[in-house]
Image (cartoon, rainbow, N blue to C red; front, top):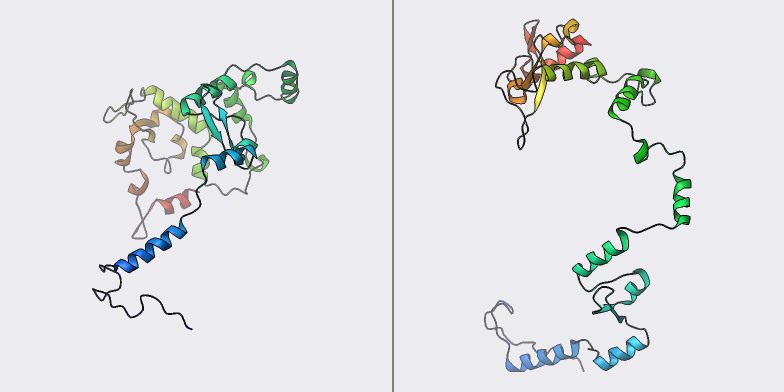
Length: 252
C-alpha cells in the first residue's frame, strides 16, 4: 500500500504555504513527537565519570596557581603543558615560567657556541658613525650585488646619494628645522613635515644642486606652492605645454 503524507490535501489558511498559517493540534503533536526523537543522547554524571575513568573523555586537574579544578580535554592533555582557570592565573604562570629564568651551564655553553663569530649581537652593534662610514664605502654601480643595469633615473640617483643627504642636513640645521615662509616647526605633540627645497630649480641649475646657499627649508604645504614643485613645473616647447616627466627625460 502506498503511503500518503498525513497533511496531503489539507488547505492552508492563508494560501501562501506555512507563512502566517497555524498548525492543527494533531500536527503540533506529531511535530512534538518528531522533535523528541531528534534530541541527542545526554550523558548522565555517572556515565561521564565512568568515561573519564576509562580515559575516553578528559579529566579534571587543579590549576597550577590557585588550585581550582580545571577540565582538560583529551587533545589538551596531549598537546598542552599548562592550563589555568582564568587569564589572571595565566599571566602569573607566564611570568613565573619565563621572567627571570636562569640557564644551566650546559645551556649557556650551547648558546655560546651558536653565537661564536656573530658580529650582530647586542655587544657588537654598529654606531651611527660606523653605519655612515660603511654606507659611503659600500660598492655602487656595476660592483653592487643588486645592480640591474642602470634602470634608476639620474635625478633619483642624485637625490639618494650621500652628498645630497649631507646637503639636506646642512640646510635643515642652518634654518633650525623651521619653515622659512610660515615659521612652522615640529614640537612635542605635533609633527610638521619639512623639505629641503632648491631656490634655483634642481633640473635647470645642476652646478648649484649641492650649494647650501641655494637651499631653504619649507614645510610640505609651502613647498607645494612653489613653481618648481612636481605638477607645478611646466615648460613650453614647440608651442605646447609639457609636464615635468618630459623635462626629466631631457635632463637625463
